[in-house]
Image 1 (spheres, rainbow, N blue to C red):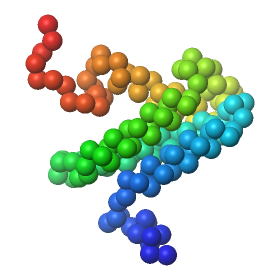
Image 2: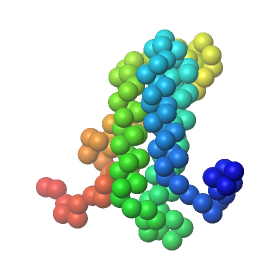
Image 3: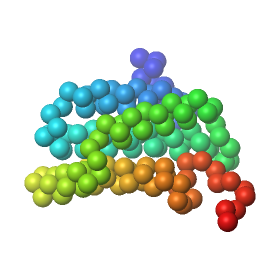
Length: 141
């Protein structure tokens, strides 16, 4: 009971809960039929949102400095990457998102597409708006 109370508290924060949740979803995705578009998108969107929110919280507190170690950040980034790699290629995800919207009015597919596109943009190294690593201080020629 104590753990449940702590988990609901605004004073307690645990990065492992987001990691465990994302890993559970990752395993669940392995059991789902690939034709079950809405469930896959919904579970994926929730797990990715949880990891992303936790990453933002881990990186900065109200004063700005990092409040957790690099191990926590690496652990969360790793499970996030695994989740995104488990998903279909972006072209297929876009088509699935349209099908989900037209058939079920579910927006989860669009959320997953947006998160996958953001990941691809971050990994491309072509911009710094949402870079996951600090840009170098030496300008490129």
